Structure formats: C-alpha cells, structure tokens
Image (cartoon, rainbow, N blue to C red; front, side, top):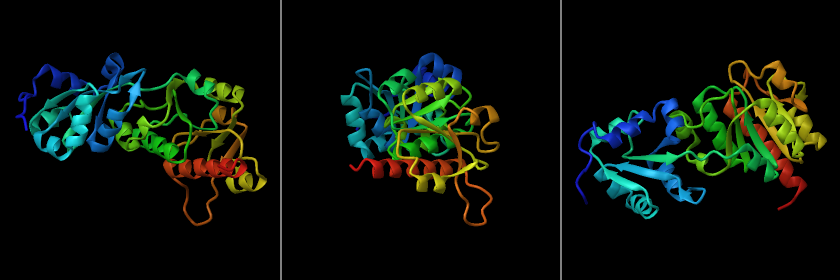
Length: 278
C-alpha cells in the first residue's frame, strides 16, 4: 500500500478541494464534495455526458485498504486518486468525523427541459426549501418512492450544499434533478407536460385520504413542498391544481417536511401502480 503523497494541507489540490465548501466556488468550478463510501461508490458509477462524475478521490491508506474495491473502481473510471494522511483528510472533509474517502465530483443537475421531454409521472418540486438537510432527505424520499425527477426552485437551497449531499445518502446520483427553476416556470412546464400539480400544505383544503378514495391520484403528478417553518406562500399555493394536507389522526401538531413528503410521494406511487399494474 503506498504511503501518503499529500502530506501538506497547503497542497494546491487540498486547497482547491477545501474551497468547495463555499457555494460561489462550487458554482465557479462546477464541482462539489461527496464523502463516505456510499456517496463515493455512487459517484464512481455515475456519468455525466459520457464523463465520469468523480474527478478526484482523497483517501487515507487505511480507508484505501478497507474500501479497496471503491478505490480501484475510481482509478479505473479515470479519477485521480490521492493518498493522504488524517490531517489532509480533515482539511478537505466537511464532516466532523471523516470516513477516509472524500470525492470531488462534477455537477450533475439536469436541464429542466430534458426532464419535461421524458414525460415524468411523479416529480417532487422543492419551493422555498432553505434547510439543506431537508432538501437532501426529500430527494432521498423521492428516489425511494420511484419519482422520475426532483426540481429545486430558485428560492431553494443549493443542491450541492455538503449537508444536502450527505442527507441524500447517494440518491443525488440516482435521478434527474433540475436546479434554479422559478416556481412559476416549473409549474407551467409540468402542467403543459400533462402533469397534475398538488401543493402539500398542513392547512390544505383537500385531504390526502379523500384524494386517494376519490381515485384522482393515479395520473402524472408533481408535488410542491415548501419551507418547513412557514409552509408555502399563498402565491405558490394558488399555482396548484389542489392544496392537499396529510391527515393527522393522532395528537401530533404536524409532520416535518421530509415525513410529509414521503407520505405524499408514496401515496402517489401507490395510486399510479394501482392504476397501471406493473
């Protein structure tokens, strides 16, 4: 096993990776950080426009031995592999306890127009979602429910925020994600593509159970999810075909954003499978 080759935190490669903690530098370089074996493994397998998504991999010697298959796959995919000591990993890592693998990845968001051309049947639209952990977790829920795409509006958090990437637990690499789309454009584009627009809101006029009982959720659907603290603005609610609440049958005051998103997305997925048996 080779000895660490990046022994100084002042190395230019280390400095460049460290700057990716800042949104403006991520946007300029169109690069972001993915940490840990799960995210790095997904990045190794992912490609953007024929190019591998993983550009560089920083790893300790111990981690390279433990995850030899990932390191070998990264090298085979054309990524530059840097062996580093713990001090260097701490510099490029954006977590308190690094797992020994830190990848530098190319941006992978998809043009909104391409998502529409694919005629999606289930889409999650994140409007005014400012918490990166919530954004990543909703993306993970959308992936698990079998959604075709996720759209982050221009009023939402950066997709490549380190907390968003970690909270997605690899789902960032699994489905198309469009970023920076004005909510009005997102709604109009999806509606023109034959998608029904539902806004999820705890104060919604329509009940999710009633929608399911009425059989209205089997067609192509986009769910709009808002800020956890204050929900969706009235002007965004007005864009939807219906504003739907998840029923609270117990004494809980409300559901957090990710839980509500999971309930709504799975409800649509189930209704769509029932309508079109697979």
